[in-house]
Amino acid sequence: MRNGVLFLFVILLAIIPLIFLKNAEFGGADGQAEEAIIEVAPDYEPWFNAIWEPPSGEIESLLFSLQAALGAIIIGYVIGYGKARKKYSSSKQ
Image 1 (cartoon, rainbow, N blue to C red):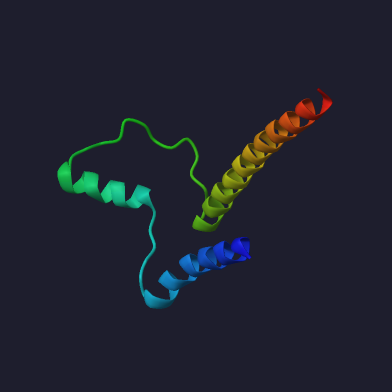
Image 2 (tube, rainbow, N blue to C red):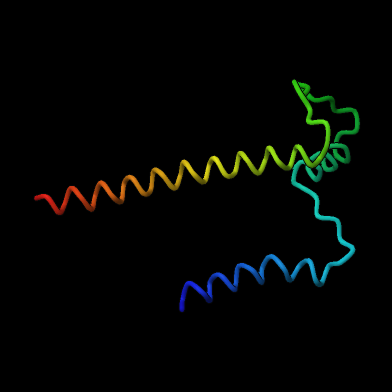
């Protein structure tokens, strides 16, 4: 029951902004940071340039999603391994 309420809450958190802000543009922090830098120092030049830039926004989103999924898998594995190790090491003694 408690997990179901939490799951419903997470779904509502994702859907409500899309319903109430229909014509809003949801941008990332990189774009906002770039705009702030241009306002503060219009002649600023970055120290480095990107080695490779994805050909489209969709591919960039795909790579970001894959990175997030890989990180979640690694974190889940580490947590599960630690929990199982604790469970089985305490049951043998």
